[in-house]
Image 1 (cartoon, protein in one colour):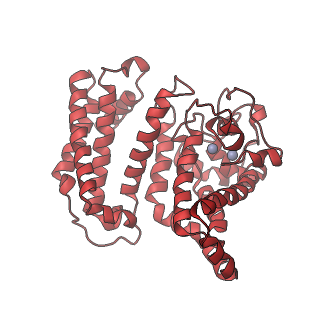
Image 2: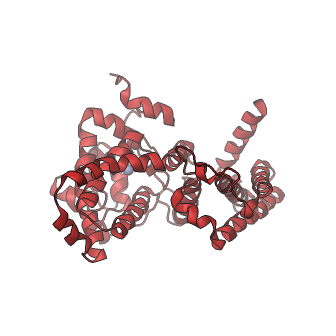
Image 3: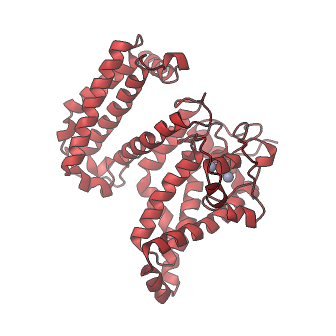
Length: 382
Ligand SMILES: [Zn+2]
Ligand SMILES: [Zn+2]
């Protein structure tokens, strides 16, 4: 046990290495990329070995796609190659060793040619492949942008509390089946009891763009008031405080959300989409866009959009929602349209300024997934 603990601490020390030990040529970039790709490839192989247990059914069709197999092959080869480069360049060998070991292990288990050895279906599957693809896609999209256009230059990828936020990503991806099932219960129940057949038929035939914009407006109105309630009602605030406990803003920070808040937020926002009968392509596109959008507004991005900022929520707008300053309390609830905050008197965007820091004054929320899961149900400390 001692050796595993030591290796884990060594690995964490390497990932969180100071800036001078991460510079180009130090073997850090190749080591981290090698490790991430090695781990991603290994987990994808596991999902191929037991798809009924570890794979999202929507992704099953990918398994027979030659491009998916080619991509997995490329991931494993690149992981092996980059980890070897890191081993050659870096005095500390833990990153390179782990990357090589994971790539080799994935290859031994079948690599890109892996076929299912467990064919049965689990009573409830875990979205392991969904987690890998989600992290690779979002990470490769936002990390380079955050490196080039960072709002806080001194903030590294593996900043404080990165493990906690990554764990939130993991849980919400693995439990995607449960989350989706629970999310649609209220909307489906309402659909049955609302006699809006003609309205739904009319909505469904509207042009795609019109439907998409309508969904954005309707969901933003619903989520504005829900978000405001989460701030103003003390019992609800204890759930939402978990999201606000993040002290660093980046592409991972938005994932930090109490499980019950995710359910409340998603199940309420899908109601207008579902009950009013928007078409599946419009709804699915919106779900994908809102995922990218909410990641974007939390990201460590210094981009200024002087004109756009007036009409659409930008990182600076949502960063002020998370600001530690007194003026930042209970402002900027909208997720898409700042106009809602202007109308309802909660708009706050000082010219050219960013918050000094993030989180809640006094930092009352404990650290870690389980303590944060229990936090709303514990007696508030006076
Ligand atoms: Zn909030
Ligand atoms: Zn947020």
